[in-house]
Length: 123
Image (tube, rainbow, N blue to C red; front, side):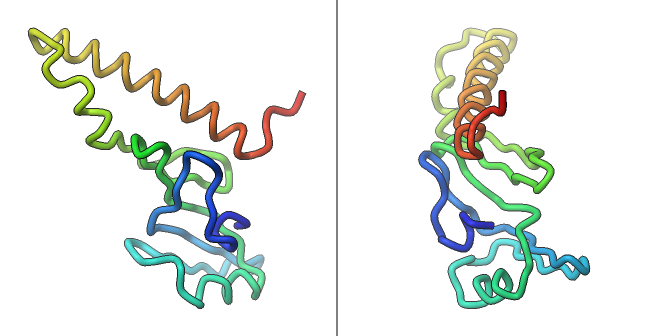
């Protein structure tokens, strides 16, 4: 909620155009493919609604929706990541292996940065 209220995502992240805000009484407001920089978002937050879903992009490589239960939904690898593997494979099996290796490495980096953005690991 703080990231959206301040219109500032943590380093390497950007806020996309999807969010869901919910009050304690479960009144819900959803924005899909909508600019989130208008006056209505701060108004909802000021009235007590908190963000339960927030569309984000990490390092211009992976877009996803972060939920209030710390789940990543609608994970999508962006073109910049797909372009990195083009022309490196001689057949479909090799392309799959290269894509899988690139994607798992990037997801590991995303999870590391997200953990840091959320305050780090509790020991």
